[in-house]
Image 1 (cartoon, rainbow, N blue to C red):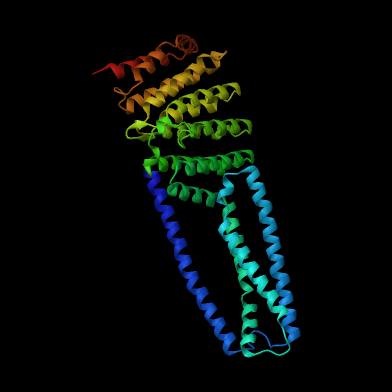
Image 2: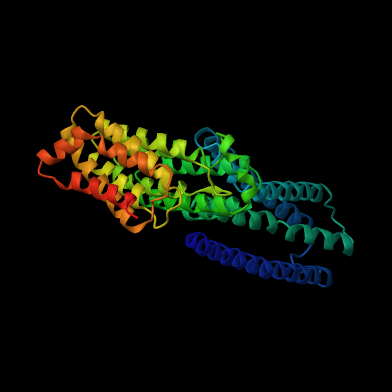
Length: 409
């Protein structure tokens, strides 16, 4: 759980920084407003010398400028939102709609005020009316200011780093499993988009983010995990299917070199528990079998081998070992069903070595499923024989060592 704590400290620090900036900006804006009001009231000609033609020209220009900005941002935003809803409907929920709405409202109010002002212009004005006209000129700066702020927000929104930060914050705040599911599916959309674009760095960023989210969903608002065992659409239980789709996309887009990190994600997911009971087990075991088959069908044997190593040895804790053993059985079963067992025998050999390492470093003697796993390995006579024929006699010895490690007192 150290990763979660570090992430939490980082994002809390980031959150405090943003609050500090807001606390500085607000009094500065208020002060500027008071200064402008003072100048406008006590110096009636501080903005511009009153003249009917001057004011008519100024207000006409302001209407054009503010109207153009309003039209451009409104139309471009609607196009972007339409594309987002078509390609990434879940990610579109994170669009900065509040800033956009604020810009629209303020711009419309300013446009209305400018229109009323230009219709109210007379050759003769009172001091109070001149003050109002001058003040209306000043407030035209607000649409431009909000347009600038909105542009910055959109740029931040499109940044992968900012999207990850926002997803982490939302994951911590989520108060329902529906909100959590939306977060998971949004991250999947980001995954698939990055894979199709060949953005390996962003894919790694999203893989790390998914491991953080698993920890958050397991340790924060744990009441949301009540009866998760009986809810197949629980946010944590949909992750193995998502990993399958991500893995398939990696293979299709020649990015299988990052596939092995998915093994670590499933390894960590296997440790998700509620009141001591596993939240995800069947899904992980089935996902391991499907990923193994797809890797073999696409001759990604080296990547599969690395995936297996991360899945078996990806963590230094014993949580979820029963799920790991179940997944390994499905994995080996797929190997035994492969038409060319000679080509996959070295993966079986590597799995035995990985299990030896695991059994040497973790007490698995009383773990449920360990006896079934060892018996299953011992029954893989054909794979063991092929390994021996290829000069690898350590497989049989390794399985024997595993057997002794669970039977010794």
